[in-house]
Length: 217
Ligand code: AMP
Image (cartoon, rainbow, N blue to C red):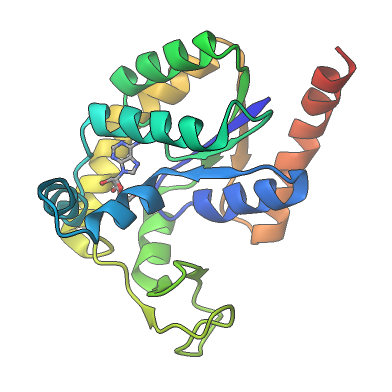
């Protein structure tokens, strides 16, 4: 069973996706991180993606599909994957669903809910490690990463203009994707405005019976 994690930017989507991956011992496909890797390359595609991310726009669906294809080619059709940040548009959802049906994969969706106001406050304050990409919230006051010693910086797209565009895209493009899965009865929703550990607990309270059901079938 795959788990798709959704949430507005700053909701803790990446953090909870990592917690799920760790607790369930599953690999994670982190779309934003994959794209940021390509964006560091001095190629036409790298430069294009870098510009798109910096503006707060969405990368084209074909590139996303290519990245998924490459991921499956490398890892094989492994049992369960945590998908962080995909699909992000209705067009991507249809392509994604077709790919997963073809691979006979099932999924469940986690929707982390947070108001734009709370999300904005978190994005203003969050820092990431420039080396390993770990995310640090305001309660961590040091300037170096406690995992790898890298420098902590603000993400290039965590600037006011890009944040507003990303929020707008989330509302217009991604919320319809969650609704698409909700209609299929696949979505569990949790409140993101709590401590990280409490969000994780809420996810597991709802997810565990579903995973157990899947195991027993
Ligand atoms: P994230 O790290 O999930 O906030 O993603 C960072 C940026 O990568 C987004 O603002 C988009 O520009 C791009 N991105 C990530 N996932 C997708 C996706 N599924 N489709 C299009 N663009 C994406």
